Length: 359
Image 1 (cartoon, one colour):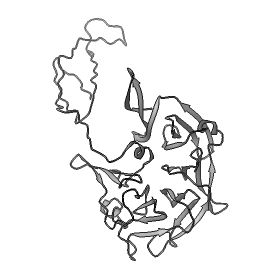
Image 2 (tube, rainbow, N blue to C red):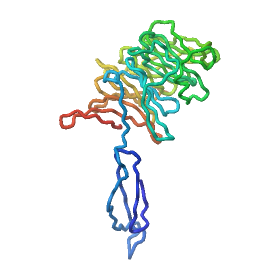
Image 3 (cartoon, rainbow, N blue to C red):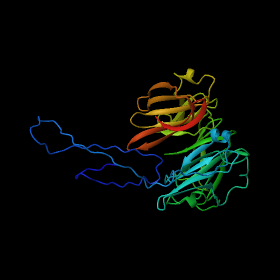
Image 4 (cartoon, helix red, strand yellow):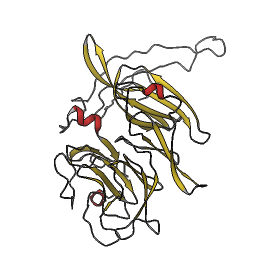
């Protein structure tokens, strides 16, 4: 915070509103000089910070118990809801969970997703592992017992209405939930909803659409676009491309629409840096847009690698970073800049300590 001092004594009260730490800095100077002072010289007076008190009564941390083990956390996929006030967490063995924030009451909540019309096959050890949002619906897939099936929630013109996004009741009306299975063998590994709904399996990539551009229970078709196959790692959208990880976990692939072929095609963009993933697998990817376009990849040994990439000229440069043992990565936007957050495990006085750090 800042305060401009106008008198000799000033009192400032500040409530950090739940912050876990804060810093106080201040500077003062006289704007009235006594006697001759060379031009351009500031005459500094004397000020002191006599005391600091805080109205904070607790740490401000928000804590919830969760059902996951370490293996669940390493393999889970996450997705933000369209309104950006909820995050969904998916892994095969545990039912989907949701972390929500209510801006009106300034409160957080964490619990299992309260579905309506949940498929009967969704039971312990057999839950969806991937999720995306497209055309006002949530789309769920990756169930072990039904590997080729995907489900769409009810549709609502207000796509931020979450009770519709969690209602999977199927029907014949245009806004009812729907269930559909791919005709080709392979387990759905990832889904991405942007300009189109694209689904990736361990055997190929598919475009999902409707005859009029809108997917409904009675108007849906699937067209295979390529046959690269992918791993169960969150896909990301970079410009008009969708980035995903190859089935062996070593390659970063990009699928995009090729106008000259009237088809989506996938190609590898890590072919110049496959030495970086030798005997390793990519377990997470994140995209930082500004000030540089960088695709960050986390390897299963805790190594962080990145690709500075211009999708328009297809110019790229790979780099490796030694930051101790990185457990997780994510990107958030702050004031027009992309901030890479890292969950890092370090040894402090011989003991492992986990921090959240920003690069």
